[in-house]
Length: 174
Image 1: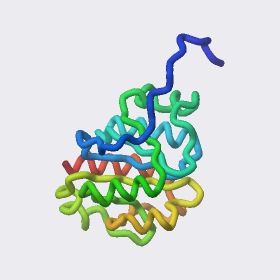
Image 2 (image 1 turned 90 degrees about the vertical axis):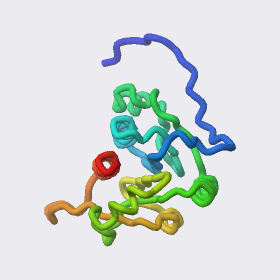
Image 3 (image 1 turned 45 degrees about the horizontal axis):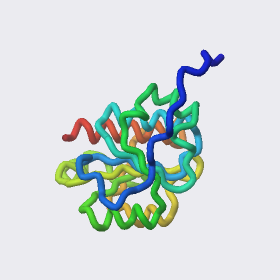
Image 4 (image 1 turned 180 degrees about the horizontal axis):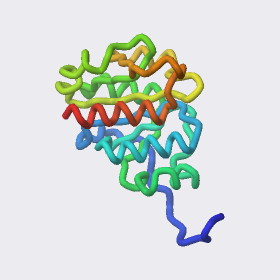
């Protein structure tokens, strides 16, 4: 049950500028995240684990929809959010010495990649859609593919849970 309107605000600009935001080492990319709760959880975790810049790529839910804002618990207002298409994201990765990481079923264990992650000038964590995972074109951009080990009692982890676990690992490894 809503409490009523407190105020009206313009949506902060989300258009990718010409310059990469160099004050953020850790970058989160959400590709095709369609569930507002998942996007909100990822944004809240991004704030908690110093991922100051977030790119929304593909068919993501609107970052300033009421359900997303509620699930971020206000974190959405402390992040730099950009919408980027695949071509723009690829250009940013290729021109800014970025190490892109993501999880795949047959990826390396986290411990096998710790040194590479620590050395990265910029680290971009890419989280794919809840149902489909990462797109094939996005997978081609990622040199460092990791896995999150878990029991075989579940097939996979929720996108927001997996992303949050990896953000915590990055945070702990710095």
